[in-house]
Image (cartoon, rainbow, N blue to C red; front, side):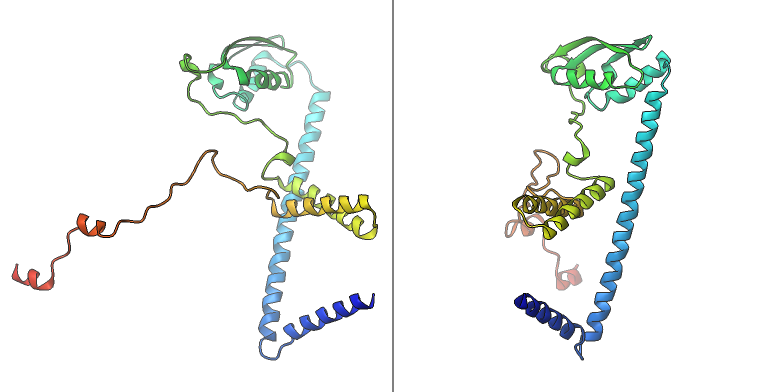
Length: 253
C-alpha cells in the first residue's frame, strides 16, 4: 500500500513539474487545454451520432414490428416490387430473375447460379406479405455456357453488424458500454472468471473505440496487389529526351 502511494505521489509530482515549469509550463498547459477541449468535442459528436443511430434503429424496429402485427393483405403488384427490390442483395444478375405473384404466393423462374439459389429463396420468403415461394429456377453450377449469367457483381453474404469490419455507431456505443462494465467489474472483484471477463471487456472496449479488428489487418479489394513502382534506369531519361540547346547554340541560330 505504501509502495503504491509512493508511486502515485512520484507520478503526480512529475506531472506538476512538467506543467508548472517556469520556461515551458505555460505553453504545455495551453497545449493540454486545447487537446482536452478537442477530445471532449470529438467524443460529444461521436456520442450524439451513436445516440441518433440507436434511436433510428429503435424507431425502425418498432415500425417493422407494428407493420407485422397489423399487416393486411398486400396487393400482388406491390409484392412484386418488394421482392424485386431485394433481389440485388443476394444474386449477381437480378434482372434475369422472373418474379410472378398470385394471391401472395411468389413464383421464381429464370437461370441462376447454384450457390445463389438458397440465399435467394430465404430472401424472398422473408419479404413481408409473402405467403409462399415456388421455385422454378434453372440452376447452373457455372456461367460458362450461359451468357445471361456471365459478368455481373458477386454478392457477399450479409453478416450481422457485430461480425463486420466496420461497426455502426449504435453498435460501437453498446459494445463500448458493455466492455466498460466488464472491465470495471474485474477491478472491483478478484476471481478467475471476472479476470477473464475483464480482459474480454477491455478488448471489446478497444474494438469499439478504434472501430478496427483487433487481429489481422483490413484489406481493400480482395486479390488486389499494388504493383511496385520501378525507378527509371540511369540514363533512360537522357536517351528518350534530347538535351536542351545551350545559350551559345541558340545565339548561333
